[in-house]
Amino acid sequence: MTIDELIAAARDGSTRAAGRLLSLVESPRRDEVLAALEPASARVIGVTGPPGAGKSTTVGALVGAYRERGLRVAVLAVDPSSPYSGGALLGDRIRMAAHINDPDVLIRSVATRGHLGGLAAAVPAAIRLLAALSYDLIVAETVGVGQSEIEIAAIADPTVVILNPGAGDAVQAAKAGLLEVADLVVVNKADREGADQTARDLRAETHVPVLKLVAAQGEGLAELVEAIDAHHRADTHDRRTARARAQILSLAQTLLRNHPELDRLAASVAEGRDDPYGAAEQLFAVPVEP
Image 1 (tube, rainbow, N blue to C red):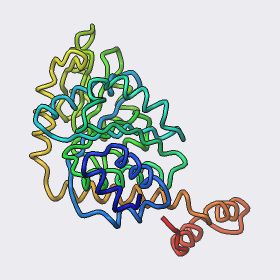
Image 2: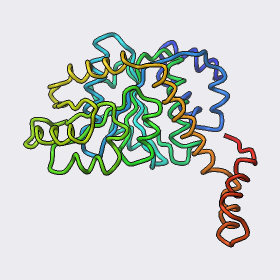
Image 3: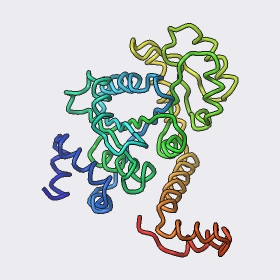
Image 4: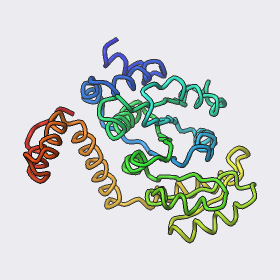
């Protein structure tokens, strides 16, 4: 099938065609796919946090809440490290089993290592594609491990950080930089001992709303959805511009990291034949293919 035929099939509800198109936007044919799309927009919610915090359970609960509103929902489970998506996709499907057979829910793993441009390029391209395929809401879930959070925050409104109750979790989250990207902080598994103290500690560490949730039982879900909607309603042109700026800079950094001249210039600086200032200028002077 041609790209136009794949787009038509995906709009008619073919998840297989949508999956094929998502594979293409992770490949050197990305620009070809994007050029065939009509402009469209969709809401994007970012969900991040450390392993075991209950992100996928929370995402599954959110998908259910938005499906009750009649919205078409896509989930991008982002793995910044793995070159393979099969294992991650299987895990996501198990945790989101209630939505597997729903034709208006698409669940996709994006394994960005080895893909063109990494997370900074793969995820915005996937979001643009899904918006053009008439998905109303896109949830991007990633593990809280550094650069990926900055890149998710550049495209999401809001970014929701999921944490568990426990001594020192708030401090650890702050040290890891997770709270810097958070628009909302959620203490999941809030029926466990220490949840109230963790919430108090977090409120002392951040100025953003801190909510409690038991995602597996749906307790606190309505409050989380309302907080997400309130944040979206409060969005401004300046905030959208700031996200766009962060997205551009993140993509530019990815392109520079993959620049074919970087290793040669680094060796030249290391051997004393060049200084880093001149090398940086040379890096910008040589065009690089995205």
